[in-house]
Amino acid sequence: MDKRISKIERETAETKIKVELDIDGSGLAEVNTGIGFYDHMFNAFAKHGRFNLNIEAVGDLHVDAHHTMEDVAICVGQAINQALGDRAGINRMASALVPLDEALVQIVLDISGRPFSSISFNFVGEQIGDVPTEMVNHVFSSLASAGKLTLHVNQLAGSNDHHIAEAAMKAFGRALDTATIIDDRIAGQIPSTKETLTS
Image 1 (cartoon, rainbow, N blue to C red):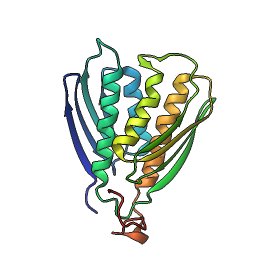
Image 2: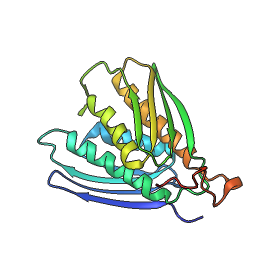
Image 3: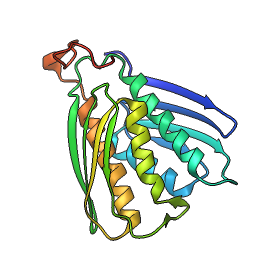
């Protein structure tokens, strides 16, 4: 099997970002965005998705967290899309239901080539550490858009915003891991009646 590894670089007047992703990793991560809880989210994503992930980001945090969080999510989505190539042999669709104490979050995704997201959170406050809670929705929609994923995020329970956001990222990692696993029964085949998942 070809290595499913990608490298993405993005530089604008607002951010400078480098992302390296190995879909077939073991959960090793080095994440430095300058936003502590955001680092924590992507470390959880990598650990529970068994992805090797490196993120280096410098952004205009003197303004706020928006540009850095958005652009990192775009780059990670692009890295997912690039690493998967033509998607031959993958499971394609998967779901994960992840608890974290009182919180329970469900992720359902399809590596469809068609960007779509439906996201439902009920956060209590406006901040989780240095992350605005409104940005958590935006991060998942940006991941779906740049990754060309159909993504449904449903908070089923939870009253602690940290637990809710972390459970969501763990669930995203778990679901993406299952969806990207190669099924030997369809080796080399695109799991679509259209025979493409990239256009």
